[in-house]
Length: 174
Image 1 (cartoon, one colour):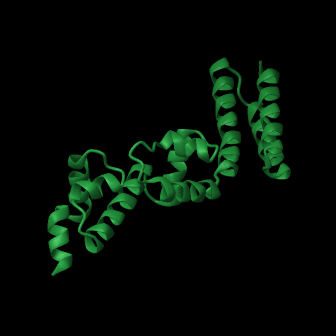
Image 2 (tube, one colour; image 1 turned 45 degrees about the vertical axis):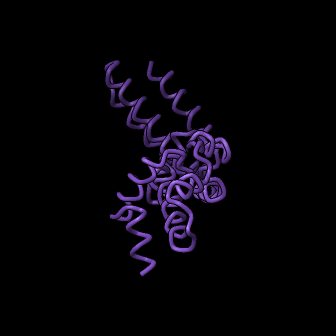
Image 3 (cartoon, rainbow, N blue to C red; image 1 turned 90 degrees about the vertical axis):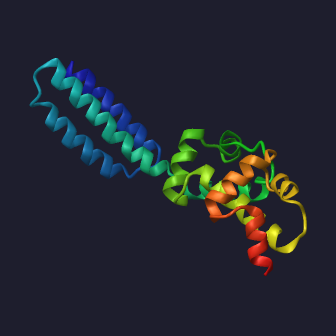
């Protein structure tokens, strides 16, 4: 059983090296893990060692796979498409070749906020600009920035800015 588990962890270690993580670093970790395996005797101990060793190897891959450039691509894509009311995280993830969950996590790590918060920020900032510089109705501004439902626009705008769109327009036009 120990040999099979050690072989599995070794195969994963070589896969991690193949993914571009430094070979010496992984081999050092693998060596430490295999030395620790010798002290485990029971099946539950060996199982725990195997799971912990695999998890440790996968953290190397996860750290290597983080792609700030993908988040930058996603931000650019959103800036060009936020006016569409139907834009989704899945669409953006497909655009930058990441899974939806991975892009979401990367967005928070690299971008400092969630996808939804960023999309709302883009839309509200553009709405503020339109409220300051045009005489379009609030409903048409809502549609122009990607809110087909004006009620949702009012709610998001008020949460973000602290006042209704009409009140904002009055404040900035004075």
